[in-house]
Length: 393
Image 1 (cartoon, rainbow, N blue to C red):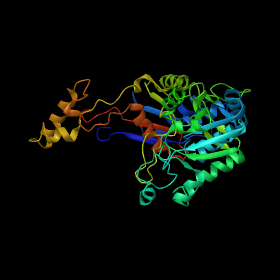
Image 2 (tube, rainbow, N blue to C red):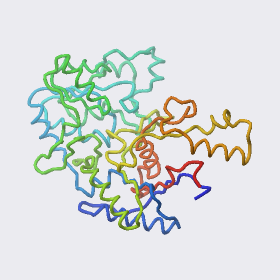
Image 3 (cartoon, one colour):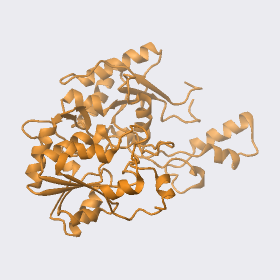
Image 4 (cartoon, rainbow, N blue to C red):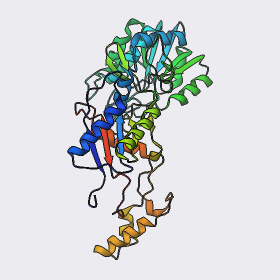
């Protein structure tokens, strides 16, 4: 592929069910796809499999009642505070339903004007119009409605205060505050429901006098009555399956990618890099929503995907080191510079403007955008030529 760079190819697969041999299905699906596309597999090609089908093949599901029992066992009786959940029917509604069933009363503390991943509870522009330019006030549910008026998510159309209140029923009180310690005015037993800042908030609450704090990765981190679980992430990364069931983040993903890599080696003699991916780590520039509602982009990957890119910035080099060259001379000089680049370009001008992100975060985002979240039916993504550069022939 002398004149082609990176290719990201969505690969269709059968509908995956519990007990399916996903390693064999993935290998078979990829080999069919490359044959159809008249491609060949090469060393360091990448096969990415979405976490959803990995979890489904494992049967990693749990019910709302399983959550309720685990919450009751871990938090005991009395009023439980729940802080900073994301605003999501898919991601949090069943978790909240389980928490509500497992406790006597809930004080639910929402952040504003948006949640941790950017879902707006209310437009930040609207707050500015109302003269609210810093967000350090605490609001009761009633005062918030009186201050901002109608609440409606721009994409789902939901009023998430009302939606979450109905899930919990009469046992729920809702407050709005961006200070995690506000919840301690109402209860000393707290579930920190945020994703990426959970440990920081847990530590702060315990320092400020909380008696018991757990995070979502501590709910269903072991099985309850034989249900699914995830020892590392608990209910983080889960999705709604039915009104009473969640699909959890998959387990044993390192074992899966290792087996998958071995099967490709057996089948085609190539060293294929393999990974499991979830949400991509990118932000919608219009809606302002950060896609990463999973705890990580990739829970497991083969060793060849470790690290960050080590690339020079072609535009910078073209405008500086070889600015006086053009045509074949420029091409030859650029290839020579690339071939002689050092193994660590950190803090060097020659890498100015390149993306200092983990390779798996970049690849997971590419795979997530390729497979989509709807009805494309491509839970497997083949990425070719990712590690190639301009100097490769």
